[in-house]
Image 1 (cartoon, rainbow, N blue to C red):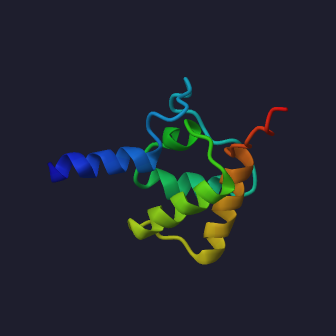
Image 2 (image 1 turned 45 degrees about the horizontal axis):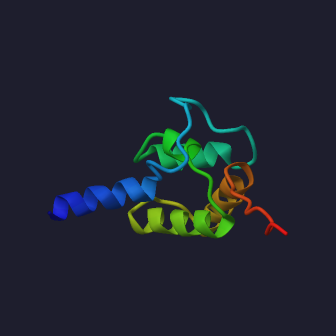
Length: 99
């Protein structure tokens, strides 16, 4: 059972199953921080995990901090660059309330 829980946590953290796209083995959108994100994230999982989700800035911040807690090596400055990049290029903007 602990193995299943660990696997479920890894899948949840990686964003598997959330807003899936047909992006298989694609590259990140070019922009400031894309190389940093590609290097840092692909050390542990496919970059497709990033391509398949959209998150708010707060959610990307949480995800990046969790990945650091799991052992990703990233300075505070690089974390800010990664969060800026992810929220700009893979962000989720909530729709305004309907009237």
